[in-house]
Length: 444
Image (cartoon, rainbow, N blue to C red; front, side):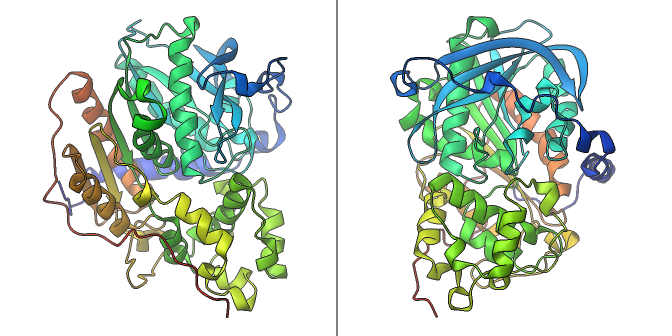
């Protein structure tokens, strides 16, 4: 349902305050890094990694679940498993499995974190293992929300969606890591999960990248996993990154994701974009090589692509390698998921300092483009998936939409696990933007 009114204002305000508090750096977070040299993350077997099927478990360990470095009575099972990176190469990645307190093994939520970092040390598995970093604060904060899922009887599977190179925003790789994480959880006798376990995908913001790409790629890359999926619930969705870069250009808060995205695209696809940058751009590029979202938000107010690019490349579409990369991570060009989906998006970006409304792109929640998300939902409906629900919160920003989405996402997934028919907003979702691939233009 397309929604305009603001709902649960008290909950939203409290959640935003909690997020702001969680994002504030503390002395211990800057000083402690207990899991930095953890050998568990390295595949050290004699057989080539390519000889293993995706989802094969390579290592297993059980440890206490940590929050901000403090051990809790909850146990987590961590798995090193074989997966695939953005360039189609075999890779090793880590996921964490937390058993339901009820012992029920029939359902599990694959929760994709929005840790959004270029530093591998900030991944959720490292936070769970006791690593404390500024960038890992987000993963630690999410633990409070995950406890609600455990209390209602869900098992949790929490993959490091960006892989061990922290390939920020590399959508297909996020999807591979997520799907193979589910395979590994089922393949491991330690988790108690099995081929009979049903899975729901859940993620917001950066977590929505992994959630949607996993749902889209499952039928072709992991049909065995697709058969186990009950649905996907996502919010604050990155659809067409080329649009997002234009939308956040000049933002007071979110403009820092421009250089983060450039680094992530360069790293994940093995391309060098520094020849197109001016000296200031290279300075920021070097500064954020291991930066997290907390190193970017509000640190570069008013930053634009034009300020970091050489004059002849003032239009990002004049950089062929960049155009090719952003087209490869455009969800509008990905397959349509075959399982039900719930999608939520805010459109109150002015509350987070993003005032732009570029032609053909429009407004959003401060970082994600509302017209793109509507277009994606409409595209899914038009290409055979009639079980798509959509909420748009016009008066909520990116942070503000998160708690509103989370409340409904958990309820929506519960209904899918219960076997209830998925509702549909197909036919009622307003039109969105064109999601056609970008075209390269001549340099100026």
